[in-house]
Length: 259
Image (cartoon, rainbow, N blue to C red):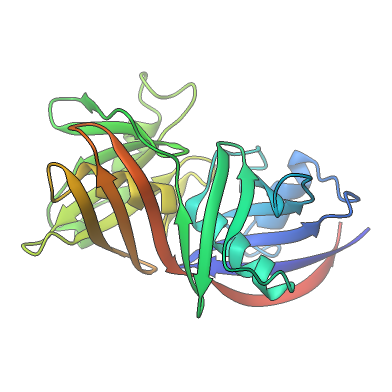
């Protein structure tokens, strides 16, 4: 079968996207993994199908690079909105469904604002680290000298530790500056490596490093792949609503491959 695909990236987090609104595409775990293999195939951090939906603009179905169906991907969601726009679906506001529920998004000049799910709890782990779910489970750890930090080694150690080994967890290393902006580097489960950016990861990190005890927060985030922003309302010590992941998404190329 000849598969038509599009390659998108959001701050270096790259995805294969397939328009499956006709519901004719079915991919196996092995096929997804092969397509996402770098050097040997298209290469990507994940693969997404845009499926038709009766009640929404579309359904986003996400697969990790290892071929397993994954949890919510924030940067993937932003890329899907840009893809929808590029495919001719022009709207002021998009409504789509993903594995973690409904999402709303807006787009202007390749800058996509994606509403994430509310977060009602942040758990403390190992004295000073944090665990929370922003559509995917995340571990957030404060570090210094982040650009020289061994993210792969330290991230793998946490991800495969006895507490997290069964279901896995994404691990974010964060450094804050005097202005309150943060730099985030992420080790992603399913990719099993550092990615240039992780949307749900920077969202989790921004919530942990919120400026204001209550009320509106805007956190600028730097990642190896580019800059993002997170906006949200903090309603309590561990509760957050109106969470928006904001940043660019770009079509890199399109093509076809025999599978």
